[in-house]
Amino acid sequence: MELSQLTMFKVVAEQGSITGAAALLHCVPSNITNRIKQLENELAACLFIRTGRGLVISPAGALFLDYTNKILALCQEARRALEPESAPAGTLKIGAIESSATGRLPTLLAKYNQQYPSVHLQFSSGTWSQLVSEVANHRLDGAIIAVNCGHPDIEQLEIYQEPLVLIASPTLGPITTPQDLNGKQLFMWPEGCPYRQSLERWLAGNGVPTTITSIANYGTILGCVSAGAGVSLVPAGLFEQFKGIGNISGYTFEQLPPVQNYFICNKQVGVHRAKDTFVALLMDQFKDL
Image 1 (cartoon, rainbow, N blue to C red):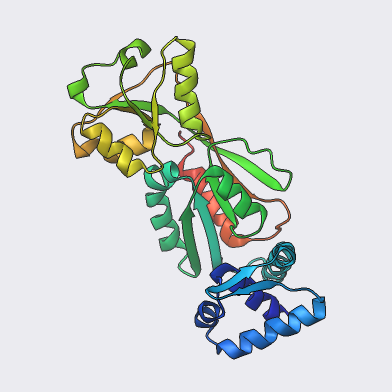
Image 2: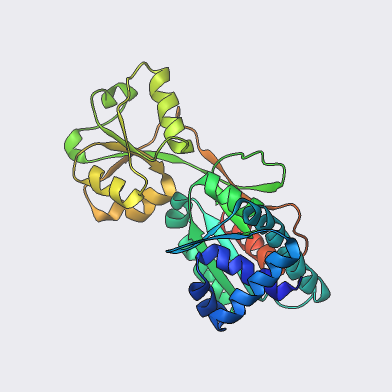
């Protein structure tokens, strides 16, 4: 079993095809096919199910992929440990929930790229549960979420508290109490979103019935609110970014406290200078929040 085989297996699993993996790894498909077959023979297990439309990872393959991710991550850590004082370099994979990705991170990402040009920063967004899974399985080096995940393999660092702003079109009239939302359409992210949970608790505590339309995209939510179709509760960072588009008013309430945001990473990963410098910049950027 060789590291090159494990890398090929990982990429094939992620791409779902030999051809796609070959393009990323810059080698011929037949080479990957042969190396995967050798790996399957050595393990005495079928790692992929061959279908007419490509490859589907088998149950044995899914189990082996978890170990592959850990092995490759450990190898990267070993390389970094040999040069602990060197400038950050290599690939850094960071994820974030969309509210943070859109409202808080653009300036920080630009600053990081300027200060550490040798780091190839790969950024993605997702739901908090997706991001926790990606970090736990070494597919992301770190992520920003807005819940205390409690995962045994995850280390989390409090980075900032995100204030909440209720947004609505001025055409709906002023909103000064939770009762002003009675009968109004609410647009929020689907179940599990901590900001949605804050809104639901606030309204339930004030006896206001809720009718929430689930929309997993802040651009669409902002568009619906701007058009006067309803109301939403969003992070202040997002409101600050988009209040200039017009026809959106913001309202804050003491009963809607800020939501703690966290940076998470895998406890099993040791030296990672690119990640550590990202965290340092992150903490400095949001020290006043």
